[in-house]
Length: 348
Image (cartoon, rainbow, N blue to C red; front, top):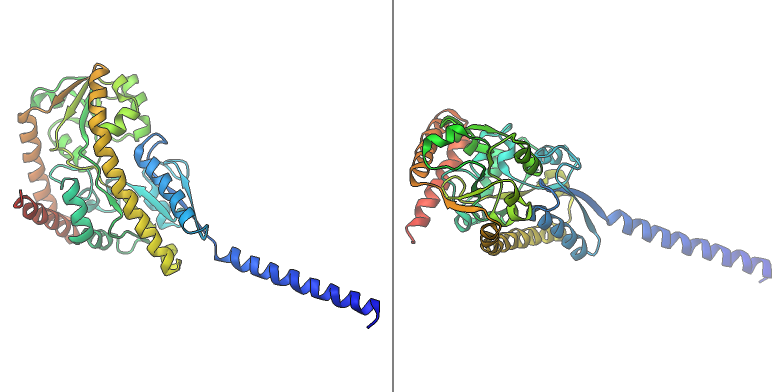
């Protein structure tokens, strides 16, 4: 064989090898899936922190086959519109509070921080094993969004209010303008309180400017990290307004169905792990934060029994009216949670 023919053959082999490697690399690149996911809070919020940790863990555990890029609440879409972005496939995953979607489903406020809701352990058990996840998916039928067992982090009970004003009786509520979201906001409005909707990241400045007198937001642990001790003198505690502060991971249905089965299992496993881990972390950190608020000079007080009783009674009326007039799914979710809670209490 002549030198020129050998050179041509070698060149041909080189081209074939390069093509094979390029094809393999292209196939490998095609296998990689990239998702975008958003939390709903500022970077300092533990929910946002755990959301970001989860995205990183899934990316690493998948060996990069599924890369989930985390975004802070409000950076991709306006705050509290994360679920709409998942529906539109702008995001493929999000971590948010169900009650931020009352504009779409009146029942969304039930699986949220609300008067009469299930406390943390019971709520997660109901969601995972008592049909809660299925009922939420039924509520969202026709929307390109889904959730699954393990995707709810119950979180400890919320702080009743951080307040500039003292609350000693029911009538005091009528003198307060407060940020209060979801069903609790509607119920307190019925009791005479002026309630408004303000994103969590804007609460500090709203209190400093005097736009509001009080607010609910999250747990003691979360709220200490957001320096709320600096803008309110009183910290009111009670499990009546919000015995838990549930947040849920939601995924785009099409993106989910396109995932290989092993990656679906990986996502479900890690979501379950991080949702529970966040709850346990905040239980511990809230115990620590309670002492920090006291040392910072805040008065940490229990909500007066009179206020608790009035709020619970108004909530019962509110939900009785809602069950009668809202779509059937409202009653299904409400009655399912109520029955589970009553059964849960019989074990105590």
